[in-house]
Image (cartoon, rainbow, N blue to C red; front, side, top):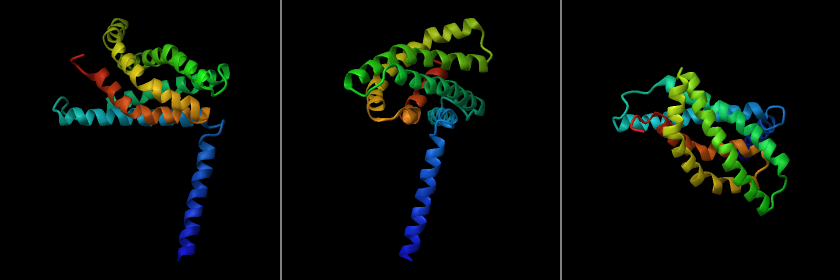
Length: 192
């Protein structure tokens, strides 16, 4: 009986290892990163909506809102996939100096780009006018950028120092789940 359990566990872990190798291979990495980003952006919105329902700020769950947030995760997942490849090509190495440079460049270039991409994607999905898009950026983007400076520098030090490029978007999204809840809150908070 113990032998059967051991063989079963070996089989399961072997299949998981094979799946990990396929998902994070150069051939499939973009699809993996986008899939992770879509899933966790949608999950973050579902969590935020349920919190709003519990607070009586929202009367019921909106599939369209979650779909739109998930699609915004797709656009940001694509940006992050290519950004990390670009950054690692331009700033190779894992010394603390290189890591800190990557963090600063990431915060100064990629963070505003991702915030802009987030609002632009949602403006397109919601058929917002250019004036509405600009107004939303003016009223809300700074809140997300301030939160980015609190959350991401320490997280990115770990990301850039310890992880290979292929796992960066996965790590980002694991950290980002809490941030995605906040992003959904900022985007959909009527009082903003």
